[in-house]
Each structure stands twice: as C-alpha cells, then as structure tokens.
Length: 445
Ligand SMILES: Cc1cc2nc3c(=O)[nH]c(=O)nc-3n(C[C@H](O)[C@H](O)[C@H](O)COP(=O)(O)OP(=O)(O)OC[C@H]3O[C@@H](n4cnc5c(N)ncnc54)[C@H](O)[C@@H]3O)c2cc1C
Image (cartoon, rainbow, N blue to C red; front, side):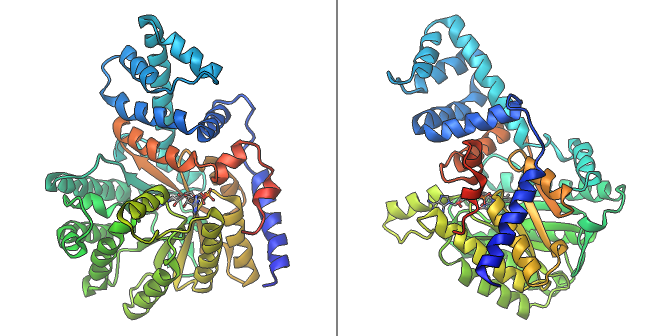
C-alpha cells in the first residue's frame, strides 16, 4: 500500500469519525469534566494531590474530613490564585465542609461515569440498552487488590456468577448481525474480561510457575463454565512482571484437548513493549500448533502501565522494556495492526484505542488489503471512549465497550488508574480536550 494513499485514507476516515462524534455544548458536564482532566494533566502537583484525595476519600468519615485532606494535600502555590483561594476557603470548618462536599460529589460522579453498575445483575438494563443500540460489551469485575487465597476464590466465584448472569441475559436479545458474526463465524454475545492476578493470592509475580499452578484450578473452572454457556473470556494483560505467569497458565490450559472446542478466548498485546513483535510471533505460532476451533481474539492496546514499567526498571537497574517515546509506541501499534490484519481471519483483531489516528489507520489498512471492516472490532472504555463508541456505531462498525462493574471504592481505584493514564500530556484524548487541531494529531508517527 503506497504510504501517501494510506495517509490520505486515514485522514478521510478520521475526519469522518470525528464528524460523527455526538455534539456537546461547551458547557455540558462532560465537556467540563474533560477540560478539568486536561487541566489536571498540565499540573503534576494538583494531580498528585487529587490522586491522594481519591485514595483517602472512601475512608473519610465526613465531608469536612475530605475537605481537610484536600487542603492539606494541595500544594501551596503563590503563583496560582485558584489554589490560593481553595486553601483560604479550607481554613475554616464551614469551608472545609463545603470543599469536602464538592470534592466527594465530583469523585462520585467521575467514578460513576466509568463503572456501569455495582453488580452484574444490576447492569442488565444498561447492557441490553447497549446491545439494542448496536454496541457489544465486555464486562470487567473490579475488585480490591487480591492478597489472599480467599479473595482469589471470591473473585473466581464473582466471575462464575457473571458468566451465569450474562448467558441468561443475552438469550433474550434480538439478533444483531454485525455484532455476532464475522468471516471466522459466530462471535459470542456475552463477553467477560478477566484479570489473572486477581485469581491468585500470590502477590509477587517473579515465580511464573508458582503463579500458574495457583491460578490453574480457578481459571479451569471459569473456562469450563464459559464454554458451557458460550461466553467469550478475554484475558486482560497487566504489568510485564505478570506476563510470563499469565501466558503460561492460559496457553497451557487452552492447549488441552478439553478446551480445543471452546470457549472463545482473547488475549491482549501491548504495543508499548519493545518485544511486542516477538510476542505476536509466539502467539501466531502457538495458534498454528494448537488448532482450536475458534480463532484467538487479540486485543491490541498500547499499554496502561507505562510509568510503572519505566520506574520499576530504573529502580532495579534493568533495561526499560517499553518505548521511551510516544511516537515509537504509536508506530509499533500500527505495525502490529498491519500484521494482525494480514493474519485475519485466522486471528480476530480488536483495536483497543481511543486515538482516532490509530483507529483510522486500522480501517484504512484493512480496506487497502481487502479485509472487510466487519472483521476488525473496535473496543473502547466506558466513560472515556463514549463519543468514539457513538461515532463507530453510527458508521456501521463493530464496537465493544469495556464495562467495569464494582462498588464506589473499587470505582475510585479504577478512576485513579484511568486518570493517571489520561492526564499524560501525550494522550490523544488530552490533546483533543486541550484543543489541538485534529490534522496535527493525524500525522504519521
Ligand atoms: C477496551 C480497552 C481495553 C484495554 N485493556 C488493556 C489491557 O488489558 N492491558 C493494558 O495494559 N491496557 C489496556 N487498555 C489501555 C490501553 O493500553 C491504553 O492505555 C489506552 O487505551 C490509551 O491508549 P490510546 O491509544 O487510547 O491513546 P493514546 O493517547 O494514543 O496513547 C496513550 C498510550 O501511549 C503510550 N505512551 C504514553 N506516553 C509514552 C511515552 N513517553 N513513550 C512511549 N509510550 C507512551 C502509553 O501506552 C499510553 O497509554 C485497554 C484499553 C481499551 C480501550
């Protein structure tokens, strides 16, 4: 494909998708929230204070308590009149109370934006609404950190419950051809994302064999239930130290005769890892050897643990395993996109990105090499990718929304992770919220 032709097509698709974003007034709550996130992104000291407040908010006993923490944690900065005023307001008991109320309200609102419901059985209306509006789902059960076997057992039981709830729910749904069929065949309606680290009480990932042994019985039960109830299981990818343990237990189990016929399975490839191309080679080789009935789905993402990977490697004197430039990650994402599209329909590709350039590149390349758009799935995070979700659905493309489930405390922990990821100045969404011109963001990496 000629690069200039591909670029022209990418720009055309991205502009068209951007035009299909829902129109929001400049004063809509959503626009104000996005602007606030972009503002926080430019002020690391406010960012740090807010993260700490979100951390302590669940255990605060009163609004004044939250207000007091906020004032104590905010950096005192003569240069910022806004901060100065906030600190002044928080000097008195009444002021602290008001500040605390406002902060709690914002934190709760933001957490609700990202989580779909407290429990799977409370999410059924929202999930049915998505489906009949042309959008598929993947459910993600949030939890606090798993530090004991009993918690890992509890997470497994919650996953089994979600499989049961989803399988019953989707039977009542009207057919949606685009969402449940591609060139490789039937795509299960029900979809659950699973974190392997939550299936073990072992907190350190340095011994992959032990991790795999500990996770195995719980994951085996999940896979059996998912196969019987036709639920797709998507294994999320976590920080690099977990990768070996995760892949070992998942690929070993899936290689067994028992699981050749199902369930439908997905893995995640993180383009920010410098060895991600080798990782893809290994997955393609594995899929060739272990002829499973359904093709593996690969959710291609950039990776959510960039700061962690850099700091962890530096602290330990290791080679940093991620690209050190955003452009390099973007370039790798496009390279892997092309390789995965070339492997279609032997592999099902899901593009997990909110970056219009990355999304448009996948569509443009698929069209250029004659792969149907319906053979590429697009995945977005609830709360962050809502506008892109609407644009993709409106454009007749298959979109799946990753829907976290959990209570407020779990929601807040998730919120902190999403904020950390999206307050980075390099983030596509932040640049858009700051008003960067779309054309500038569509330049080839
Ligand atoms: C449906 C869905 C599921 C996901 N599941 C997972 C998962 O299982 N595991 C996981 O790790 N992530 C997952 N993610 C998150 C994903 O990895 C990205 O963090 C997130 O989507 C932001 O990428 P983007 O393409 O939307 O935005 P962009 O703004 O284009 O990219 C931001 C990303 O670029 C990379 N980056 C930022 N700064 C630098 C730098 N200086 N040098 C090099 N690279 C840099 C980081 O990976 C950062 O997240 C998921 C995302 C979605 C939408």
